[in-house]
Image 1 (spheres, helix red, strand yellow):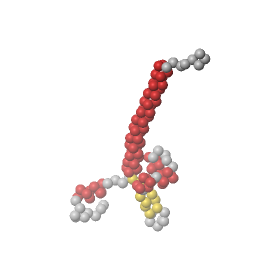
Image 2: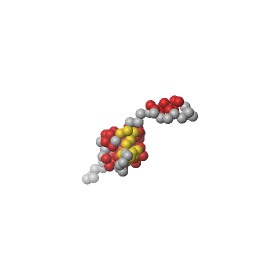
Image 3: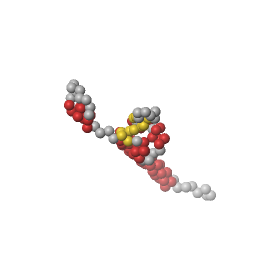
Image 4: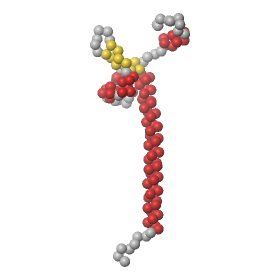
Length: 121
């Protein structure tokens, strides 16, 4: 339980006490990211910005942990960005297809209007 500061409103203290931090290790981060490798997790600048390093008493090594909801929010943000980019790419593909079809129609129309000249005549 946190020591209560009299200048701090009561609801803020209660909120701190009920806040649940769900710390996860690299294996769970890899699983949330679709089975990515350990090195890709450590090389990802967005994930490293979310990482928190803990030093255990009496040990020099540090443990790295992430908050589950932050990792999930990052993955959701990436999916949303991908979906937005996919819509733009879809529009480009449709426009390219329409230009190609229009060009094909023009070429076909020219062939109908000007029949081939007989070379041997």
